[in-house]
Length: 296
Image (cartoon, rainbow, N blue to C red; front, side, top):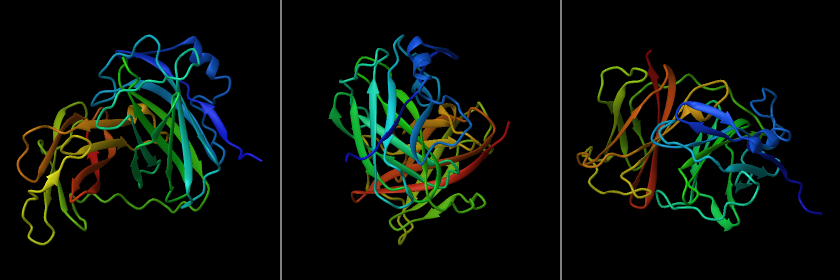
């Protein structure tokens, strides 16, 4: 007997500058999807929120008049067990989107975060054709997860679809945020700083990561490009229900000093944010996570 899969089509809206208008296709999809529902999903996966054009912040690009739809399929998910995830992308008429452009060396970037922002994983699903992507992972704890699926159909703007998953298993209480600006990892010491003394919502800021050798304490001179850039940065704002508006993907700036990687962005609203910077050394990815607080 085939394994039972649960699937719900992601309700997708179109973004024109700062306004949001539902298409007839997304309204039809809402008959089978629980759009913006406050009820927990079954143990498995469903999808919610928007597919939107993507720049370094939430609303930088304009979406074409026919935005793609995405759906997530998964078996019942359990803590620390292999989990096979499948994402299907289709157009507004329900036909598979078959052509995708490579960006940052991949056809799709899948950012998986626990809703308490304690855990994050950056995955690259394999494209198997006819709009279908597959990837395997593990979920480190029980509870709710948000998956930001970042892809670029050929001839269209880069799009982020927000998907949801519920995982069986223990969910430990979230620890108090650690506000320190230094992380000591196996192959690097990562220091975080900013171009401004305090972080203000809506203000431009340069986020600076300085990476040092853990033994010599000297700046790393052997950092390697990661996904075609000096580094990768994902920022998620803490919220009771994570949506596309809480997600920021920033690109590395050129010409930073040796051992440093810089990113330019804005924090759109005041509140707590989790930053995950990723870099590469000796073929290994370095991931450093930090909490920051943004003032009004």
